[in-house]
Length: 112
Image (cartoon, rainbow, N blue to C red; front, side, top):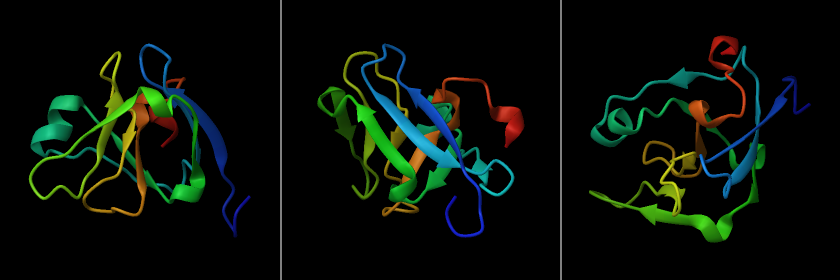
């Protein structure tokens, strides 16, 4: 529990399993967005933006590569093996971590 909010720990990762992470989220309070920018639309990214203290990379730092374009602020990280974009540093919130809700281990979309 942090402050007045209770968080649930969710784990997720890329398709091949090389990258694994844990995120603390509150399904009743955290906002999910479906961005229509050129890259997010093509990736099918459902955004859960959290402060870095609510995100832990469990494994795979060596399996991650980064793609940048345009302003170079956003750090689009993805697995070098399977290409899945499980999380990244967004241009809109460069000091936060943006987790792809679709990369959580269980189908939790209806909880948010």
